[in-house]
Amino acid sequence: MAKVKQKVSGTFRSYTGANAFTRIRRYVSTVRKRGKNTLDCIESVFTANPIDPTLA
Image (cartoon, rainbow, N blue to C red; front, side, top):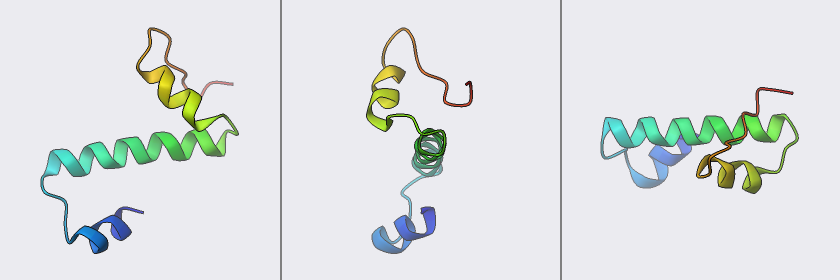
């Protein structure tokens, strides 16, 4: 997925941006593999009780 992102936009603008993209992408990938609702998990990151998809 990161390679596709690079090909479409040409490159990442910064190391920080590339790092943020991969962290978010990794989280979403894990959530999907665990069969959890992606949107609920992303919303939970911004609350006091974030869902850790690697547990249960």
